[in-house]
Each structure stands twice: as structure tokens, then as C-alpha cells.
Length: 115
Image (cartoon, rainbow, N blue to C red; front, side, top):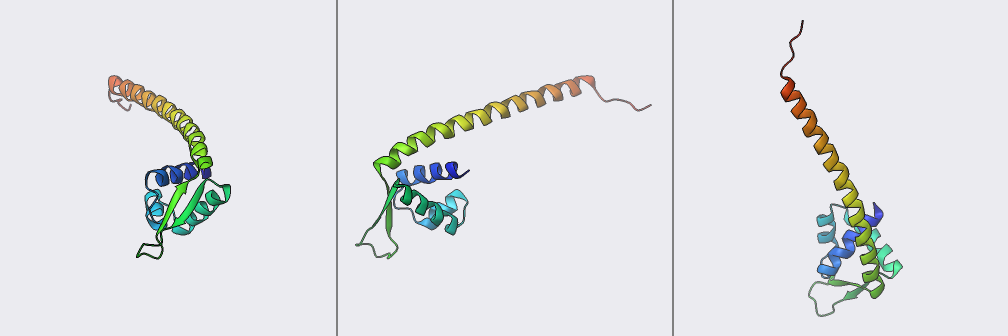
């Protein structure tokens, strides 16, 4: 779960480095304090750096930049995330196919009468 959150945050920041913590938290469906904890962990790992843009009228104007190590880790996390999602997809597809077969069998058998 934590790895998925790291992946999603890194992916979001790479695409939009100027998002606020509140915007990121809303998009991810996590609390702002939870996201803050995650960002501190990513900074501690050296995967992102925070830059304050001084010309901004918004005193909380930060840009979150992926470091070269962060970009490399994002690639690893992307691969793992994709592998997990493909496994989930295969399991879900098998369940759907099974339910379709069951529904077809029930439909073909018709209603049963009680004696």
C-alpha cells in the first residue's frame, strides 16, 4: 500500500511539480497530513527535492522535483505496480468469466419449481 502511494505521488509530481499538498491529497484521496508524511519520507529517501519559488505571491509556493534517484525509483515502482495490477486484472477477469458461465447455466436451466 505504501509503495503504491509513493508511486502515485512520484507519478503525479513528475507530471505536475507545482501542485500543492492539498491538491495532491485530494487527487489521491488521502488526508493532507498523510500526504505530508509521505512527502517527508520521499524527501528523506532523496527521491524528491522541494524548491520554494521566491517570486510567487503564494508564500506556500513550492515545486516538488524528482531527483535522478527518484526518477530511477519511479521506474522500478512503475514496473512493480504494473505487475500487481496485471495480476489483479487476470484474477478479476477469471472471476467475471466464471460468473458469466454460472449466469448462462442458470438461465439455460430455467426456473425451478418447488414440489
